[in-house]
Length: 325
Ligand SMILES: [Zn+2]
Figure (tube, rainbow, N blue to C red):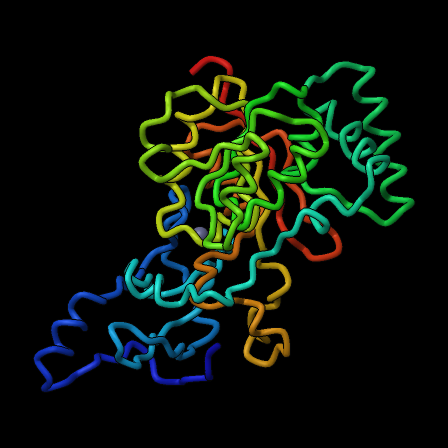
């Protein structure tokens, strides 16, 4: 997707008035302080400088960026922040969505039940739940499984729980949840997969538009799930605030996302063979445990679980809207 480019902060100059106009429209925002609302440190280090080609309005262009690392909170982020128009140009039809019903629910019903047991103590507490959770955790470790909170917590909720898959991609997770018995399911930002909308609707799953989400009654959902979505958001703090309003008091925000840890130590980033997995500039942020915690706490959530998934070093988090705000 990109090539190494040691040129930094290029000022695209042109005498073509049309392109000058495009340049102004596509103006990106350079970031001088850490974007974490609780950190805002100026101890930033540019770990990588790359040039990402894209096409907009029929014109081939390049987005020059740095991958910047905060030495205080460990957040890595794209710098400058691209405009929404430029970012949209990088989302092509072949962008891989990490999901299929078989993949999301490829554990089998027995393993899904174990994942539910493991996370039930987070949802409902109590000594019995803790014992069940400990036993299920031991089984999963023995089998080499490490289930994310964004799957385990919804599975631990009752069958009448109201769930929103925020950034539902092709809707595979919703279809899987329908198959295991959940019925009050909603999806937002369904991709353009042909026929999938009618498939979801035939299963009784409601697909929301952006306007629907804005108009949705507050305190509607028992759980809102973001699976590999948070790293794509231009304004993650704003999205966290909006989701807080959608959740009922005591409702759950569950998220899973790539972390900064596969790219550490940051000094060796340039030479990593897995560099394309950074997905620049589409993945705008790569969180550490501290930076993700800071974002979520800053917006008033209570964190009940935050861990690295061993196999992929993804971060997964379970946070709650406080019962009384
Ligand atoms: Zn920071």
